[in-house]
Amino acid sequence: MNIPPLCFVRFARPAPIIQRGIFWYSVYRHLRLLVSPALLGDLECFIKNYITDDSNGVNWIKIGDVAVGDKYIRKSAEKITEEGALKSRFVKKGDFILSNSMSFGRPYILDIDGCIHDGWLAISKFQNYYITDFLYYLLNSTDIQNEMKKRASFGGAVQNLNADIVKAIRLPVPPLEVQREIVHILDSFTLLTAEL
Image (cartoon, rainbow, N blue to C red; front, side, top):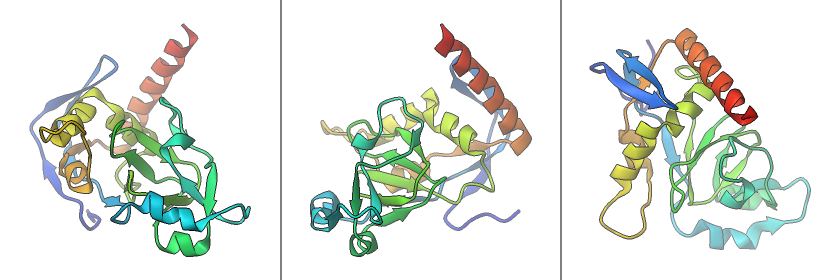
């Protein structure tokens, strides 16, 4: 099995993962995600010099581009120049981004290419191990969200995630066919609850 760089795999004791009342008992290998922070510093303030109205600009993805509960980021309100993109973290359609402060830990699937500022963490190169929708449900699960919250609590008033915190969280890696079945069940459950 080829493991991507910076990912760590280990076998774990059976442990329940709970999502919406469904228990997944895992004897699967565990993996740590490849997580990239945006560039250091207050990039959001710095990048204002590179905002453009040019329709060919690069999407500048901000937390205001999504609503709570959204699964995908499909558009951005602003664009930046190519020069600004070179000074930022470029993310691709299909990658995940996690908010890292205030409403930290919320995962979003990118449906566009673009750049992010230092309020986001990017997760990429997971496709050999996870179905995108499965990883979305896993990162949104109560257990993983609580683990991020616990690790981000340093005694201060503001909780922040960083790449090291997210990398340290071990995630189960069921076989892809099991992931597909779990996604099917959770998608059906989501559809049923939306109809209520």
